[in-house]
Image (cartoon, rainbow, N blue to C red; front, side, top):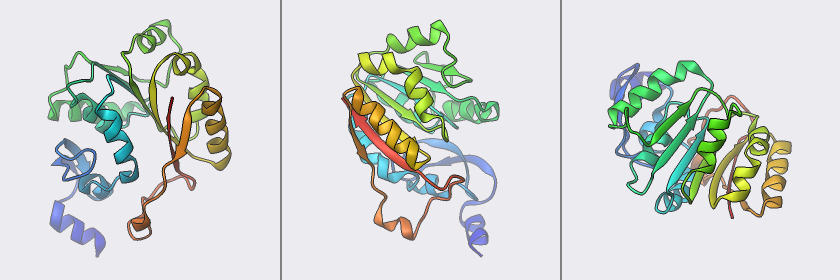
Length: 217
């Protein structure tokens, strides 16, 4: 019944749709309403929205590790104060939709956007690109279990820049270790609490433990 109602209201399949509300409200994205209805309605990861909006007003660059289909990269490029966006994701099947989403919002050939089909390959050019980013920098990391590894790989970058960091951890031990790592670098780290209404509109995720951390110097 639920699937039938979705199909009647929004149609089926992945196709261009306007996001109604939330962080990505006003963007046009390729959305599959059968499994991404929370994105369409502005409920997807809505608890992080206030933090990201505050950072969006002052950030001059953004690093998206686990860029997925590019919705956050497109959101960042909407800001006239943003000079550079770096997007990383190793899943090659995502990039065609990523590029379509950039096209839908006028960012396909935007010179501010650099994409890497990997998670920090460690090349000198990537390191140079990171260290050259104008501050403040917003970093989002969502990579299903390798978050601490990436934090270690960008240790010097984290130490040298004014940074806002949104990090999703996927186990209790990783949550503790990532928090300790960031606090040792001088970050103030806070957990992003789940909204009370999640009991009625939960986000279906393949990994049982999901906790967002918000950190800043």
